[in-house]
Length: 223
Image (cartoon, rainbow, N blue to C red; front, side, top):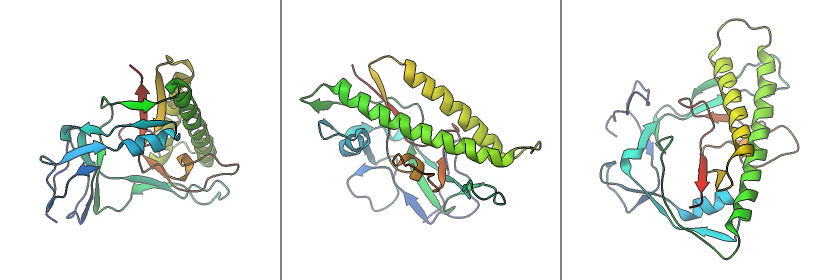
């Protein structure tokens, strides 16, 4: 595949891209054509993130201007029972470019339900909250590995920022208006955000290095 320029320096690579992992698109394309692609978020993906059979969503069209190529960053070696190994943040598959929805994008869509949507979305938000608390607990445990380290360490600094942002987000969830609900949408969540576990989830942590947050956080606002 021909070398593709990233947008705003978001995509950092030194060699030709071998694969592009696309955002959801209608139709089939013989080559990579983001300017002509018809992007969308499947209603089934939103329903899956909400986690209820009582509510359905239409597909939501996405303007290609809100889609960017990015590297996927993965924090590995995060087992807290190993004092020797320090977490390592790096690009996951450097030759793979991933199309992702830009942070802060606002989209409109429709939902369908014969039930009270507020109750359904409150339950979904509680599950999201439990997953984020689980992730925050693991980040705190990982940061203990860096106790006594005074020098600047990329992974430590990113995790500290991520911890602060997650704590702020959890406070915002508890005090937010009752017409807005947080879900965790799409892939790249990692094991920590795929469910709530009674034990430490030892999988890697995927980090949006632009925003110092997990991927896929989305608000649903009822209007």
